[in-house]
Structures are given as structure tokens and as C-alpha cells.
Image 1: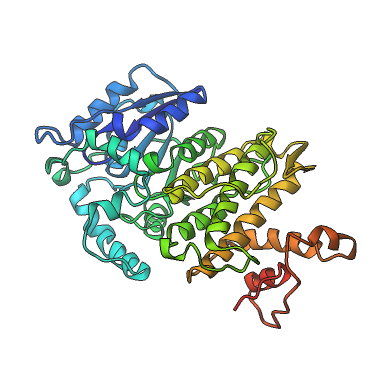
Image 2 (image 1 turned 90 degrees about the vertical axis):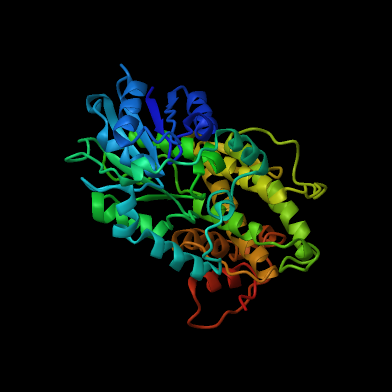
Length: 424
């Protein structure tokens, strides 16, 4: 079992920021130590932050040092390097020797990257704390965070990060795909240029320990089995990951307006509300499937859409992704909707549901939709198999009649046609 020492970002409220993620790590049998720094104290700066972190490490060994945002300026300055097993930099300001946090913003072009990302997404460039930091955090968690809110002192922003080289341990860079402070593409570039590390991506904004604690804990634990300095998430026992499809479903659901809930969808006789209910049901049902649990029964369509459905669905999708990252989810057979199949085949079905219904929901509400080439290829294989003569009975109810999308279509258009959707 590992010891995770968790460095907070600016403000230093470690106990509050890391609370949920620390609980998830400890539930998996590890030790989690949030570092508490009085970041609003002008008398404290980077050297003091490093000393406080050394005290938190104490006599522990095999430490995974996790540094959030500006915490990356603390990580290379610690003295207890011999205790480290690896470092994880999370939505991090990755420094070079002698650089101050204030200089980092100018040298890396962080502000310009944020403005460019805002313009591409149609967001204002006004710096709104809620929109930048809290956009994907559940309301009840936001209330909890208020108790640890601190205005960061100016002191550390003008101090150099005094180190000669990063500790000689594996370093992983983990990036929130929806980070609005440091856009994902910008973070990937900085990690590559400054560390020679290919960053890993996960759903969530800048404060993923609060918005995605379950998935974050899964990612951190997965790094323990990765001996390289560039941690591509995954395990040989697991066929593929649902994170990209779940992230797109989450994004699309977040863009549905209340006045669109009664609009029609590409799914015959279903409104947007009906489709959202179905996605709720399948997300929960396939989580039971991954755990080899018997659900209460096949989806009934009787679920009412809760008021905070977008936030609840987001949490349920995190749970679904985490459940299918367990190697046991892929073993043997499992049940879904009253049908028993090999677990690996059911994993393909849940990916297909996320991708196609993500497109259905986006199409019905006037949003763009994207899917990875890998996910499209898996779903296309399933849809093509369902066109075989001996599978036509099984196809009915799962897909509509095949639509001819013509020549020169994109891979996504081809998938949609096989699945009975009209891409246009």
C-alpha cells in the first residue's frame, strides 16, 4: 500500500480540497495525507511550503507526491526526496529551475492559451471565479469548499523555485480535459517541453479532486503499477476505457437547456427528457453489470428526471467509468437488461450506448458531437455485426433501419448510418 502526500494549489487549503479524493484513496487501502498550508499568510513562501510538505512526508516511504496547480512549485523543492516513489502533477504549473510562479504565467503563455480556449468555446474572457474554477463541481460540494477558502498571499508568486533538477523518480502529468484556467492542450505542450512527459487526460475542470474524486483516485492508484515516467493509463486486463465517451456525454448533457426537455430526438417516440432518463438508467444498470451485481430489473422508463439531473448524471458516469476499469469487470459473464453475455461483449454495448445516445442528445439539442476514432471503430464493429442475417432479430429495438450515408463519409457518419441514424 502506498502513501499519497497531497499538495494543494494556491491558498493551501489541503484538508478541504483533498477531502473526497483522500477518502477514496483510503477506501482502497492506501494512506492519504493532505498538506495544509496557510497560503494567505504573507510570511510564508515557497521555502516554507516545501518545509511543511517535508513534515507531512515525515518517516513515510514509497510516497506518491501529488501536486495540484501551483503546488508543482513546491514539489521539486522538498528535501525528503529519498522517500519518493513517484510524482503526479495535476493541472499543474510545471516550473523550470529559478522560475517564479509570477514569471511562469508570462513565459509559458498561460493567459493567451486561456483566452484562445475561451474564444473557441464561445466563453467570455472576463475572469469569473465560478466559471473558471467551479463550473463542474456539484452545488453541495461548493458549499463545503467555502469553509477552506483563502485568498493566496502575493509572497510566493515573486519567489524563485530553487532546485537544480526534478527528483529522479517517475513523473506523471494528469490533465483535466475541461480545465478552464490552464486549457488541456496548453498543459500537454508544457509537460512535453519541460519534462519530456506525455500527459494523461481525464474528465473534469481545474479542481478535479472536488468534481471527480472517484476517478481521480482510480487514476492515482493506477500509476502505482506503471514503472515508466510517462503514465498512459490502462491495464492489460482491461479491454478499453469508457472515459472519453462518458466525458462527451457529460458535456452534452450539461449543454441541454430546460426548455429543450420536451423536444423530439432521433430515437422514435422519445423526447429529450425520455432520452436523459434512459441514459440515467443505463448508466446505473451497466455499473451493476461491471460489478457482477444483479440490478433491480431491466430499465422500466419509470424514473423521473431529478432537478439536478446533470450533476447527478456526471457523478454516475464517473462511477460507471471507474467500475469498468476494474479487471474483474471484464471477466466471465454478466447480466444487463435481463440478458446474460460475456462481460467483454457487454462492455462494447455500454460504449455503443454512450456514443450513440450522446450523438442523439447532441443532435436533438443543436450541439456538436465528437467521439474518438478508437471508440468509433469499436462501435462500428458492433453495428456491422448486427447487420448479419442471423442477427436481424437482435438488431430490432437496438438500432433503426440502416441509412445509406453515401461515399466519402466520415467514420462517425458511417457508424450512424449502420446504427439507423441520418447524420445530417
